[in-house]
Every structure is written in C-alpha cells, then in structure tokens.
Image (tube, rainbow, N blue to C red; front, side, top):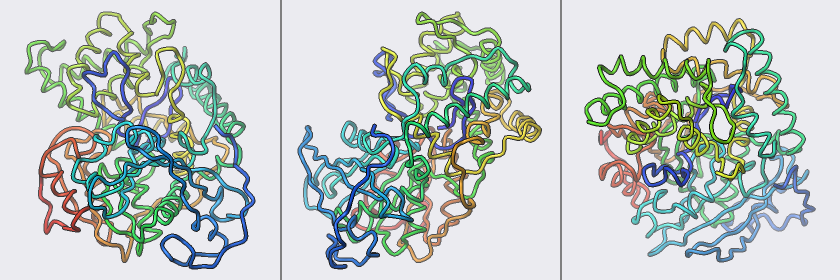
Length: 524
C-alpha cells in the first residue's frame, strides 16, 4: 500500500494484503501478506498454429511461448512448482525472454480448472501467497474444485526480478531521516536525489526488464499462463492491486474472461494524486475507527474523544519527525517510519490491539515495536536482510503505471489539499510524485476507465471502511465495467473474501464454482 519509505516519498498505489509479520507480532497480526536483465532465449521455429495446450490460434511471433509444456515438480506440502517462459517485450517477442515462477495446489476433488491468484502489491508474491498461505488465499470449497495457482508477476520475487540496492542501501533508502524541514526546498532536493539514485540503481541492476514491468505486460503474461495451464477461459481471484491486473486483463482479452473476482478494487481512471488523496482519507477513517474501538476498552493508551485521540496521534508523528527516537540497532524512528508502523496494522481490525501496544511504546520513547511493524511491512528481517524484492518491484511497477509531475509549486498546492483531506496523516503521504518523476522509464499512455466490453460477468468486492482501497473505488470500477457486479462487505479492513463473513464467502464461491451471479448487491 502507499507509504513514503523513510525520507523518500514514493508513488501511491495499492500494496498487497500485507506480508507475514515478524516473530514478535505474528501471533496477533495474522496479515498476509535475481537474475538481472533479460534472460535471452533462442526460441525454436514456430510450430503449427493449433499446437497450444488449448488449441487456440495466436500470432506466430508468440506461438512458441503459448505452445510451452509446463514441467511440474513437487515442492513440498502437496504443492507443485514450475517456471514458464514469457517474452521480455510483448511488442518484440523475439528479443528475449524472462521466467515466471508458478506454484499450484492441485484440486482436491472434481476439477473445474485453474484458479490464478494474485495477492496485490504491486510487488506481492503470488507464489509465496499460495505456497505458504493457501488457506488464507482461498477456502476449502475453492480448493476442492480448482488447481489453486500462485504466480510471481514479472519483476517480482522468484520470477525474473527487479534488483536495485543491497540491504544496506535499502535501509538508507527506506529509513533515513532528513535534517531538513518536510516540504522545504532543501528537503525536496534531498528527496529528488534519493529517488534518482534509487532509479539509477534499479536500471543498473535490472537491465532491459525495468522498462517492461508495467501492468499491461503483466496482464499479457496472465493470458499466457492461462493458456499453458490448459484453460480456455481465465478463472482469477485478485486482491488489491490484483484487481487492477485483472481489470486490465479483461480489457485486453474480454472474450477470454471466465470468472473474475476483484477484491479490494482500484479505480483505474484515477490519477496518482487522486489515488493518494483517497487513500489518505481511507487510512484516516480507519484510524478513527481504531480509536473509537480502543476508547471503549480498558487498556487503551488514549482517553477522551476520538478527535482528541487523533490530535494525540498527529502530535506523536510530528514529534518524532522533529526529534527522532533512536532504536537499539542505531536506526532513528522518524515520522515517515512511524506512519508506516501505524498503517500496517490498520489493514486488519484483528491487529488493533497490537497497534495500541506499539503507539503506547512510542509515547514512552521506545522505538523497537514501531520498527518491528515497519520492518514487517517492508520485508526486512531481524538480521537486516530483506526477504524479497517487493519494495523495489512496487516502485518499478507504479512508476510505469502512472504519470508524475514533481513541480515544487504543484506539490505544495497538493500538500495543502492532502492536509485538508486527512489532517493527521495527509502530510506523510504528500510529495509522492518525487519518487517516480525522475525514473529511468516513463509511463506511456493515459489512465482511463476500463469497460471490458464483451466480457463475462465480473464480481467487484468492496469493503465499506477499507483503508487501503477505499469503497468508492469498488463502486467506480463495478460501474465502469460493462458486466461488473458490486458485492459490498459492510465492515473494516483491507479486502473481504475469506476473512469477513459467510455472505461474502458463499457469494464468491458460488460464482467461481457454479457461475452464479448475484441478482443484486447482497450487502454482506
């Protein structure tokens, strides 16, 4: 989800159902969450046009990719793993290839087909999501009828990946504290230098792939996976950013849509600044909901009203931003890192108790728990290493999916609007344009509505107080899609399927298994 890592503001887009937390908080926070450059491959002469696993005809240039035979091998826990070759550049498929890592749990009963699952991000590992957390990704009914397939999109994890900094470089990028006043000319210059250096490191470490990690390319990969798995139509469950990936797929291949569930939807027509503003309001609303629940308990670190609690949280953020708290490992807890630590447990109401513990510890001058939360969000291990490249991929994909304008006057004007929209946390989500404005490759095209004309029915799930992908986006996407159907979960937290109630679970399962489309929004 959207954060400004350390002192470096980044773009605002939808980070995944958050990764598994560190050992210190795992019991309370049940939140899921390189080969550099292109892999050159001299492909064989195209075989006959009907030799794809599904018997479909595709362009001769991509025929060798669609005609692959997937070689599965056991990889523990009843799972099977494989790699699939995809074009580095779908516009020039003969120029080289990359690898996509996939894993599946074979259907436990009578099989309908493959259900491809994406946990979000961008940058989230669908491979790890399914292999390590298949029961979190899907329920028993779906596992009975589908091969549940996880995949790492291009640039991510075990697939040919984006590579930028080593662990020390990532620490500096994510956690460094600026001595300059937030929003000042000196601060903007410092952040611009940091963003430019990061982009250059990504270009050096990743090579030609960095220009090809946008969501349209990933959607074309998704169709390739559908075909080599032997499915004539795509069955897909996408969370958070995964809803954008699924919607782009439906726009590109409406005739190949089988049953798509888009949970925690994104409005594809919004600008980067509009996304950030709406998310800031979403997190602010979730923070207020947390405080309301906290103040009704006996062990809340706040007293008074929700408004006074919000003022206390805002003052705490501003205090550590001005006077950082040093942790035992020498890192300093500034406002940006504390912001990350606050929004991390807001993704799931079950984690609110731990949020109280963390905030109370910071009030007493202790930064350790806040760093545990921020590290869990960023994929940083206790030994200082990083478990994956999700932050690097997050930046790389977002920089290719939106346009950016880092004019200081415009950003300051937007910061005022952000502060009005979200008075407590808005300032810590401002100036995000800096992160991608000097990226080595620029977004090509325009953001707009997605209609997917001629598609099969698509379910769009929205949670009324989702902090990361606010409900208005689900309303917008379901209205844009020619055959979109809104399913509302009235509750808290990020995404709804398999973590809310039987109404949501039954609606999704009946649709994916039997094709049952609700006659109206069930308002679960």
